[in-house]
Image 1 (cartoon, helix red, strand yellow):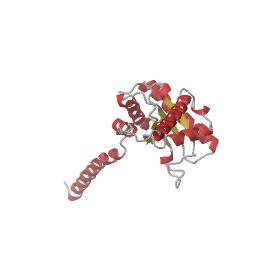
Image 2: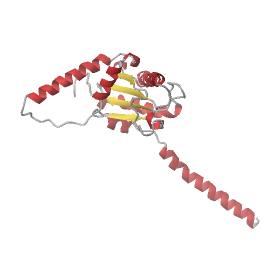
Image 3: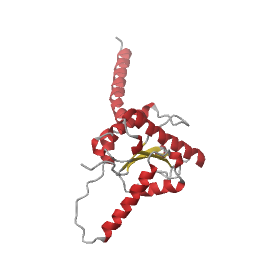
Image 4: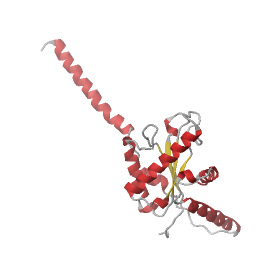
Length: 217
């Protein structure tokens, strides 16, 4: 074998080795979110039991909690497009301090069809919501878009995509439809307002409303 031929063989082997070592790195970066990560994000923190020195604050807290529960109950079994602007804003204010997670779920272009590459994340979401730790909770599934396009278009698209996630969770993961409230916010609540067209704004947010419908353990 000539020197040039041997040199080409060595270069080819080194190149293949470099490619082989690079592939796991890229695969790790693209790894889907896990069931455990979703479960941890949506599980409420256990609050320590404390004795109150005053009857005032607990009574006020109970009143607020009752009102919140009634509001959540009024949204169960309703299609997302039936929610008024006022109800959407009230829901957004209510869930600010609730356990939540943003999932960057991709859909086919101009469609509510979940993309193949995002199915593992949606499947992980289904397994997490079916976990006994979250049993009895009502979950808010909120669709968001980026700022490309008009208000009405994005509002409709965000609602259809939230409904698509709910449909998948009910049909494939066995989650009760009444435990999933869908809402669309279009481009009104960008996650990154400084970059309104960024992919991070195209997301589905899942919130645990902590509205237990079954007796606590």
